[in-house]
Length: 186
Image 1 (cartoon, rainbow, N blue to C red):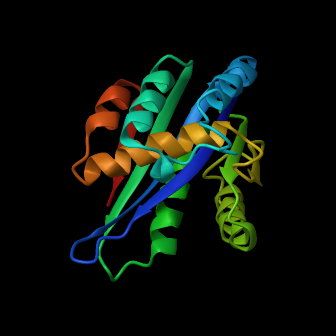
Image 2 (cartoon, rainbow, N blue to C red):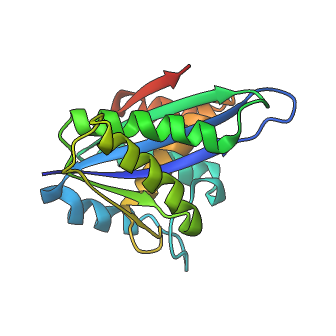
């Protein structure tokens, strides 16, 4: 059974278009626990979790190399937008496409990093997509804290590497490029 873990990244650019991206890391249920254990070994010191923007450049490169050795695939949806598009609208566009892509790959379970009170907005999108039959009714979707799910760290790393690449810092993305399908939205 395939499962997916989703995280997002927002790069606000005050003098240029902003970038909103969401990554889904897709793993087979049979590999999930081994991948979690590997991700946990990447924490440094007393870190409770990995978080792309908090890691050193050298550690981000180590994380990227480790991800290439794991049995996972990734999809990243990217919305490059100007000031007339609100970030929540960009998120909705990215998430809608991700749900569609995951459903077409027969992913049965999806876990998103929780935004707590704002999770209701994602639930509303999910309900709308189900009602209009744009995705199946059987895909199980839940929201959780990244402190409780290490596989969200992998999604964070993939989306972070992608948005940093778009900002002219390609080192980590180049390492991961063969494992990422990037979809740019209009």
